[in-house]
Amino acid sequence: MVVFKVFSDPENIDSVSNALKEVKEGAFRDLKREPIGFGIEIIKVGYVIPDKTDGALPKLEETIKKIPGINQVEVDMMTLI
Image (cartoon, rainbow, N blue to C red; front, side):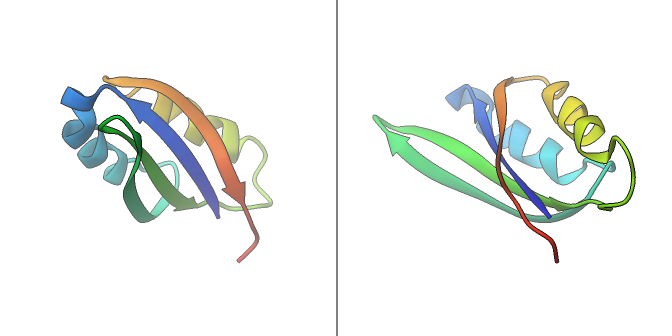
């Protein structure tokens, strides 16, 4: 499982949240919006990806980065399930 921190403009956060739930490169598990200060929120989103498939993580990350309204994407955590 991999958890990403997704940074988006405040006016796009709802549409970005909905688009993240529709990503097909990984099995969507969870999405949370967390305040980081001054009314700004980040999105933490988790996906399950196969650990034995080469390129699964970069492909998922690139798909997320292509969603309109996203400014930055970081891997926050990765673990085996």
